[in-house]
Length: 153
Image (cartoon, rainbow, N blue to C red; front, side, top):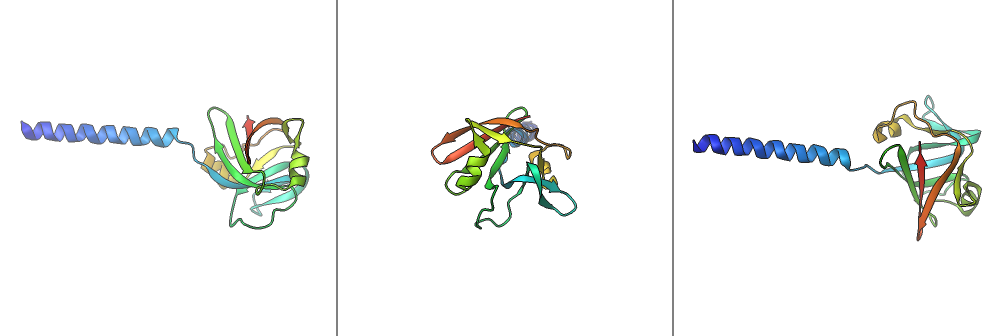
């Protein structure tokens, strides 16, 4: 009888632990280091952002620490709640003043064309391979040096 009780207790503990771990994994958002490029789109065959007149491109950051190109922002992106992406970066080291002036106007982040993403980033974020952001004005907040753009889709 003691063996049955012990085995039953052990099975319940394992099942409870598995439930807690799977719940925690699904509820905790993952944060990914990314590069944002304005006036660009993600080109799957070349695996890079290519220039265009409008829009933007997001891809996983590789290396980092280099000099920011015009229109480039280095930051992090995560999903938050229902149909929301949060893009965070440092105003002093993640964006140039010229890029900030170009993209942030009248208290809004201005996306002037479709936002595209690298396939591996979409997969990491759990988004469809056809996902894009629509052109438009998006809200942002600033807390000290950190800026967070909220993309509702």
